[in-house]
Image: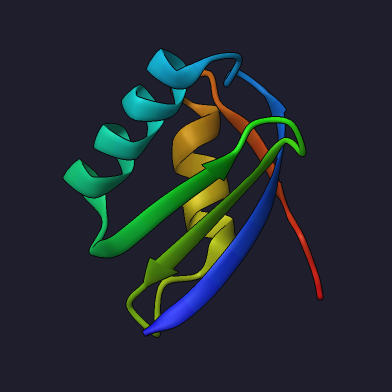
Length: 72
């Protein structure tokens, strides 16, 4: 499994939005875990190793969620 970190740019404003994004992701990709830090505008995911962050970003952008990859 691989940990991916993103900054929320637009589209997630409350826990309902976060839950909608979580369900949207899990319907499309094999993502084990999705955690939100709303005050910091961050989302962390545990996904399959070969899933590219750019695929997640592009998929969510079409659904009104805007993320950028966070590098550590």
